[in-house]
Amino acid sequence: MIKSLHIENYALIESLDIELRKGFSVITGETGAGKSIILGAIGLLCGQRADTKSIKTGAKRCVVEAEFDVGQYGMGDFFQQNDLDFDGTECIVRRELTSAGKSRAFINDSPVGLSTLKELGERLIDIHSQHQNLLLGKEDFQLNILDTMAKNADRLADYQQQYHALRQAEKALADAIERAKQSKDDEDYLRFQFNQLEEAKLVEGEQAALEEESELLEHAEEIKQELSNAVACIDGGEYMQEGQEPLLQQMKTAMAALRSISDKMKTAEELANRVESCYIEMKDIADVISQEADNIEFLPERLEQVQERLATLYALEKKHKVDSVEELIALSRQLSERLMLIDNSEEVIEELRQKVATAKKKAVAMAEELSKQRQKAAKDVEQRMVENLVPLGMPNVQFKVDVRMDTERLTATGADTVEFLFSANKNSALQAVKQVASGGEIARVMLSLKALIASEVKLPTIIFDEIDTGVSGSIAEKMARIMQKMGEQNRQVISITHLPQIAAMGTCHYKVYKQDKDEQTNTHIVQLDEEERVREIAHMLSGEVLSDAAIENARALIRLKVRSEK
Image (tube, rainbow, N blue to C red; front, side):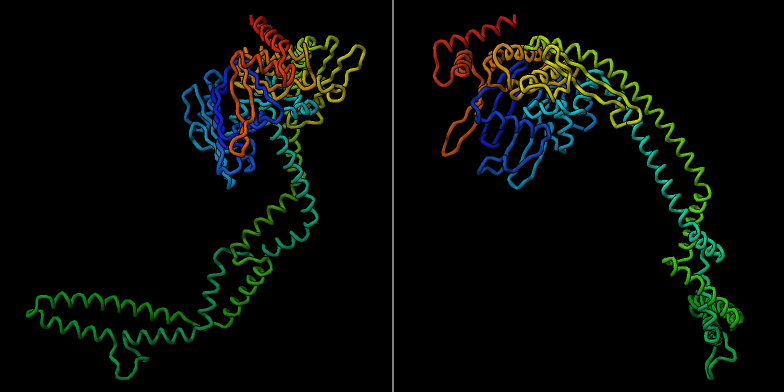
């Protein structure tokens, strides 16, 4: 629950600090004083979208920070999963927004993304604003309430995993059918392409080898002449130029010269040996070059064969828009696989159909179990809603949860369609609550539903923004008692109200007011003491001018709250 709240430079708020208490508290103030502004700031802590227009005029940034006591709500898993510091008791959440549009969020001084902040916010605070009454007509909202009461969270998560598997299987089947249809249309062309590649008898590395051989055959005479020249330079021969002495002969002369002075120079023998090693290596090189020259032949027929083969490969590569034989071979394999799928498409499709049937059977079984639990919870919700609504001025109320299952229409939430049916009067047919309930009746229905959910969910803080719309008098008092009871369940319940009957029931009373300062209007909030509280409630009863009767009525309302607590 919120222990303290700090707001700085947000809308009409220059600086606001307030400590909040557990139990049932109320916030009052004139229309336009800034109650909704405070709710908007709290919404930022819950991950709601930030708007630079919210920054107070003239300020460079706004800051909203709250300290929460979460020691008894089992949230350790959240902090562990998100690698956040946590002392097991307190949590500090901060949101900063700059005039440049930059938004930052922190949990226990660690920066986090908005998705993480929103996840934590959903576990910390439930803000019920007036527009949320519209949710009462939404099927998913009604279904969510039913699942909450049925404790279906784990079952629903398991079902949704199976539902996802079913959808994947159905997609795989649809894709296979579409591919088979497309492939059937293209079969003749695919088979022609495959056969053409198969007839080419492609071999990896063939193209590079043929290109090398083609180059050799095209320049055979030139290559043979240059190899012979090289041999002549090293070892002599018919191609040696006149007056030129072969390299090997020169090396022999050099060896003899060095050895002739070996007795006079210590290093001469070593140098001679090194020259000899070079001589042996050069002689071997000359022999290899000579063999290469002997192997070179100009073969016009072979050159023609090589060039024809290369022309075939180049034509195939151009046709299929690839750059190598290896890519042609890969394409051939792909075509082979596609043709195999065509040949075996019926078997593949039938196998996928079996997978879909199996996945659907599992999903249906899980959806039926969900529905069974929802049907049980529906009876409990019906009974408890009537018990809550009768004291709220609806002695003849009827409330029914209509759960209809259709396993042929599986959705991400199961096979059920849920609708809340309602009647506040005798002999009136049950109809969808959104169609027949008045504004005041919807407010009471929503409060009763929130009370039900609060009994099942460990939610630290619930804030009601004018849940009392459309009600007054004793009904407002009874609604206040429900919120008061909710606040007794180790929870913080805050009601923003215009009704004195509700304001008088709060354990703590806060007032929001505006004040003009330096040509600016600022919003403030303050906790009222007992006498201030009496006067505030009296104003709510009588208006701007206080009467003795209004003050006495205010005291009577507060005494009524004290008696109810006893």
